[in-house]
Length: 328
Image 1: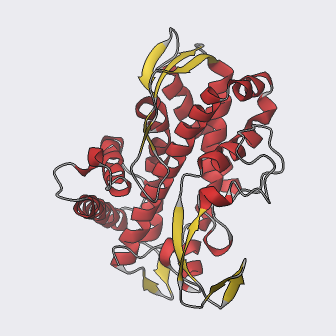
Image 2: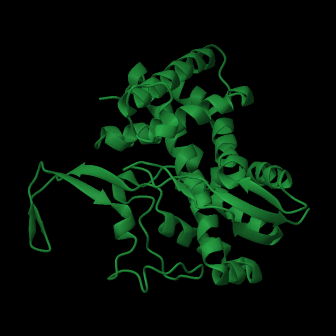
Image 3: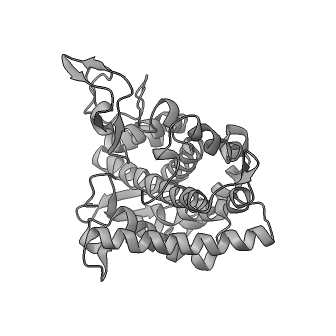
């Protein structure tokens, strides 16, 4: 395999690896990060405040915020953030010509970026073994499982997963969320008029955007679904955007409604593989959309959103907008 991490591990191994960092992502631990996330978000919004500006929302806002939060958690120095941003783009966007660079194919682009990330985190992990800090790289690099150090391949795969999942998915929910609000001005007006709707609006944004398109899973037992037999050992592709628009679960599923309730979406997965960073992603989204809608005086698209060419990630590469934000 190209990596061994939580997404492709089964119990009981999955639970053992998940526990390595689970305390970092509990609701209590995440609440302690709110002040820093508020500061990062305010600083980014301040850079575009004042007169109306035309900008790429991904470049200026939705890209930098999750990356800054994640890099801080991992312990990556600020001067390396641009590298991490480029490598993650190249990994998940390897099928997109914009991110292939000089690689001959998408697979080569992904392999090159993955090896760069592995090399980077190998060096960072070595440094943290000699001089541990209060960060996730130190935590995993110095952890043990059943009395032995975490194997090198699994250690690097862990960091690889965290930097990809923690950066790309939240970024695309932010971009897709603003796009949905601009395309549904009545919902934007409703949210601006009632800030108490932000938490529910974030859940609707996550349902609507569903950043992860699909995972392939293996059936553990024989099963029949709607008359379709599924045999143990067969591979199934689970499409999350479809599930999040299930007419039997959601009223008016193809409408974007910031006050939707109930909203039992499964954009963060379900069961054993429920997203480890869901609490963090929700907090980042709540902070951004609370601050953004409070300061937003004008918002319009200045061109079409450019989508990532990917069968795995529902990404927005570029979102050209004209925004006018009140200075705080």
